View 1 (cartoon, one colour):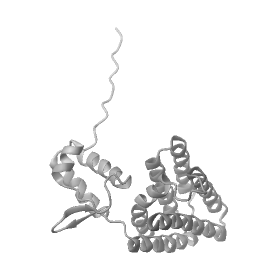
View 2: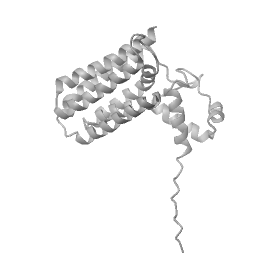
View 3: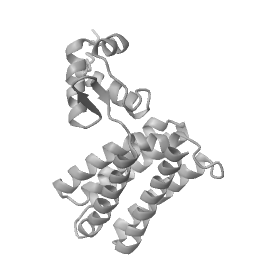
View 4: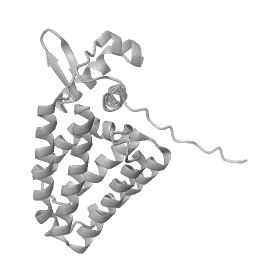
Length: 230
């Protein structure tokens, strides 16, 4: 008599996680606009998820500074302002350049492998023209670079800055900001710079790695400034 194979049931993730991931995606992709009011009843109806998971998701999003709470307006999507954007880029440059010297003194071979994996995910997302996945894979690449420092305070600081940068990354990757430069050209430039950053880490080239990081951030910053001021 043949044995009946038992298939393992894949446990469903908690509804609060589903709510969180759905809202995050909508915020990053700007379906929920900066300063937009997120009304609880509307979220329940739109996402088809109960009130308690929605509340748990909003608490988590508040902790990650993706949303803000105001006494009269309730929960709103965190605004994107010129002041905050300027501060974000200043912090990104100082922190990521500062990490280089520390990272190059450590054995970061394990994190370099993870950077290569994230790099491949960027490539796949570009091929699929999936802007959200480009943003997510790019975020993972830079977080793995931060982990090369093996310094929990620096990693936490990069996580804060890079989370703030996600919506701006989506703007950068989803818009033809410079008519003279096709978006595909921008994708390839980012992809190539990621490859060069990995090479510099492996070969311990401090000066060149810092130059790449400065160029990487400068390009990102210039695209956002053009977009916000046009």
